[in-house]
Image (cartoon, rainbow, N blue to C red; front, side, top):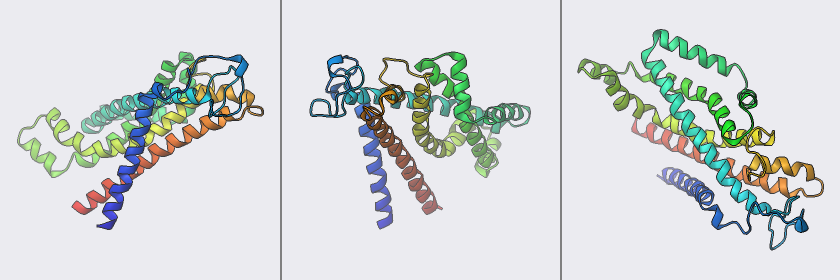
Length: 275
């Protein structure tokens, strides 16, 4: 009983913390002390102070305001990518695993080709072909990360498609689409959800990496990777630009990872008790 209460408490705390982050991203413009795009060369590279808690950059822009603004760009773009790849990859995995045969072979061969390359390296190549820009960076990540959900969805479908309740539904005359929507999807949704939450942090890092390399968000966009890329030229004279942005990335990534882990532990505990 005490362990169950502790698990619920940990899950609730991590969920509340992530919701606060999302709320800050959604309403960040209310919390920015200054205009994140307003330049003031007379205030360039100012150290952290009461007016500028995280200092200013080389153009005199408030670093804290740019970090808060960048949170909405980085977090929501990552969520959009994860939502897209989870739906796309899961649909492909369900079709592949449920249909089998030639369709399964074709989808899995394509998936293996994509997975033969390191994810981020392939994303860099795709972004380089498409050209720089936030949207192209998101497309490049979508083109790479769908394979994870395709393989996961396929394996989950293969594990349950021969279960007795599926066979009973077939005997009763249930159509394939009815079986998929009523039995397959509800039973594979939990692992997909856990993977999606954990992947948000991975996509945030990948998106920041693309922007850092100049393949994602472009200047003067307030995106975390772009802010760090601009700040690296002033690392010795104004390290706060990079340090505070890095801390923001660290906090958000850790928050989503902890939430994903807590959801997984709680669901595993619930399933084991029901069994």
